[in-house]
Amino acid sequence: KGLEQEIRRNERSVFFGRLAQGLAHDLRHPMRNIENSARLLNRTSNDEGYRELFKKTVERELGFINRFLDGLHDLTHPAPLTMIKIDLNRFIDEAIKPFEEEMTRSGIELKWEHQTNDAGISADRFAMERIFRNIVTNAIDAMPKGGILTIRIISCPNEVILEVADTGAGIDKARLPFLFTDYQTTKKRGLGLGLAITKRLVEEMGGAISVESIKGVGSRFILTFPPIMA
Image 1 (tube, rainbow, N blue to C red):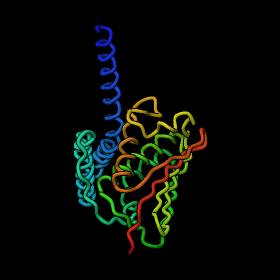
Image 2 (tube, helix red, strand yellow):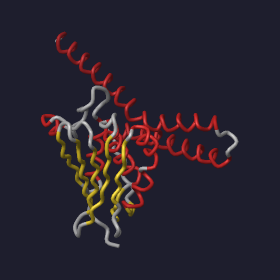
Image 3 (cartoon, helix red, strand yellow):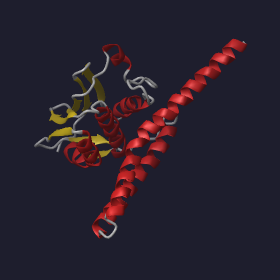
Image 4 (tube, helix red, strand yellow):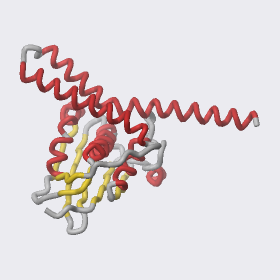
């Protein structure tokens, strides 16, 4: 009995240690945006336009952090999604902006292949933002020496496909089957919670997610959603 209790204590210790690392990983990007904006504000304090941009940046990122913290509770008590029509073209135009400075600094080229026709899906906007952030952040982390991030939308009669591909480190073949499992990670640091949450959110909205990856070549995430006819 004493040995079993010791094992459970060790398991809890490992779990909470990895949970803390995962929280730090997920929150690093919005905090970095606020930090970078604050530094620039010090140099452009007399620029009224930038002060307004700074305010909007802080409000956006703090809003995301608060919703993210709420989402931790939703892991065990999922909140109902608010489904609305989202045009993926317009959504990605807006969602990619917070990453542009970091990609430029990291030497990452963005290839955003717009869809010419309507790419409407029924989705929860915050859930889509969380999904997109998780996948794009992973892609950027996989390309510390630069590379190409390709985002592509394909509209088919029966589905809308969103592809996010990178030319990064790739994922070991043995890890692929467990990539979307809670608490699995492909990184030395950080909890593999982001992709587990991503998968759950995609499926709750009627979609599906899969990944293709070659070690040393890169990874491609494929998300499919039922379409909304224009």
